[in-house]
Length: 155
Length: 213
Image 1 (tube, rainbow over the protein chains, first blue to last red):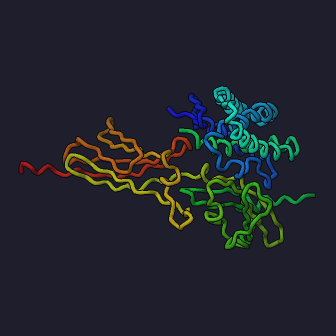
Image 2: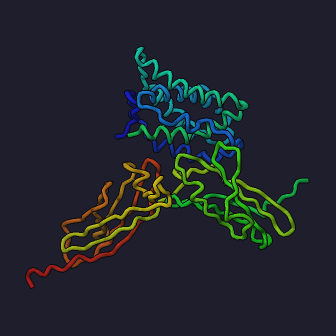
Image 3: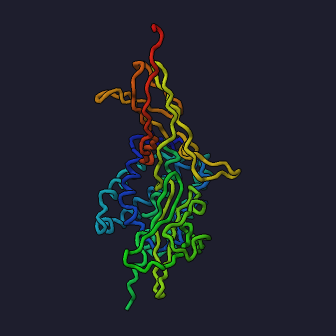
């Protein structure tokens, strides 16, 4: 079967197509709430040229943020917009992926993990610049950008 | 009191097939026929809306934005402004558009070659309007690479079909009866993106066995 290979980090048992279909089920509802069309959080320069070695650190930070900040605070909206099934499918799969990621902590990996951290901080910085609710809505609506990036590591 | 001009503009959306991206819209049947439309577009994340040349003050209800929305790593918006003869106007925006996510796949072009006891099926590359830096047209195979498969079926009779699936473009159904008609179907599918084309169909007859005549 297929698996995610974020550098040394391998994640099996997740079917990317199911994540896509969960997102597509709610995409128009979610993205229609985001009227700040002039701001993109997961900008190209943040996602571009991520090395294999860096990718495990980077995806770990992103998924942790998505689970602890975005999903956690978007739940009430998910109920309101009746998209709880898609919401849960994505949240559960993200939790599975994160639980299987083991970013290495050795000293020689410090510069690589720092690169990944700088990328994540660019994303988080853009998130913090927006009004809280607008930022949550935008980040949630940008999961297709995240999934498109993750797809490169799905083999 | 805000004027309700929604009759001027409805269903502003992208229709995308093999990465040809057409913006379409409607107006209510009873709206005035001399309404004019102007199209703008932009990348998601950018501030400025750009006017689409060739789609300014037009009366038709479609606009080809393939070139303007051709970067596969970008997402886009488009919007239409309608103005009727009475000076009433309305502007409506599309949903966020990604051609990678939204495009549908057209049936492939296939050459079906009957032989005496087999049928060869050669799938031709599916070209898109997207050009590389040096001007070459990209094919679906270029874009989706190892995510793209072909699935072929040969209908032997009402209850029995033969199946072949693969990434290469030449297939052969073997062990067939001479001088018999078969229906072959071929689809392109990209499972990870949940995309599947309608089938290309060919009806062919294996050659007669002339050895003993």
